[in-house]
Length: 184
Image (cartoon, rainbow, N blue to C red; front, top):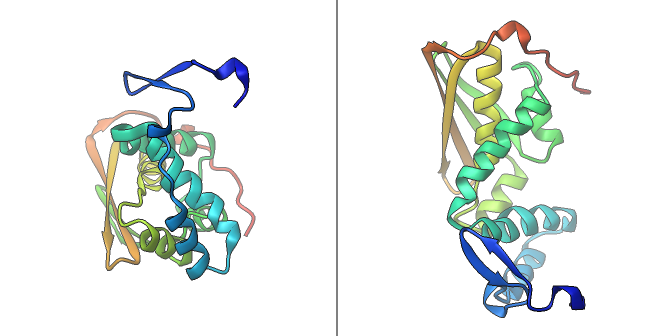
């Protein structure tokens, strides 16, 4: 450890934690071995390492909320249309996105695919709030109405994301949304 970090404290969730303190880092060789045993795609390990191991350690009980708002932030930075959102999800490594139900107030999406299955298999508490926030913000930008979303893991291999818009609360002008062009 670099000497300038010795005896340094960081504040995480209003708790001072000594950098280098072993209580923050539990040995997780079992997860790594389990991943390698069941997966040929070691490129995916980086996603698993960050999304389902590091971020929950850093964010603790705020993981869901922060990832949800991070997803909303990404949708603002990378606005997509409903026609291209599935391609964007696949290209981003989020998984395969399929629209199951669509009305003015409610959309139901199915998130599936190899990466989704791997994340759920390795971690029953895998968090999909980043994707959920992205879908909520995308719908809000397209419709102009206040929109939120939630997800549920289904059948240990897919995620169902429900997006609800409050059509009585206009929060932005949908004509201000200019989706990026997605390469197919």
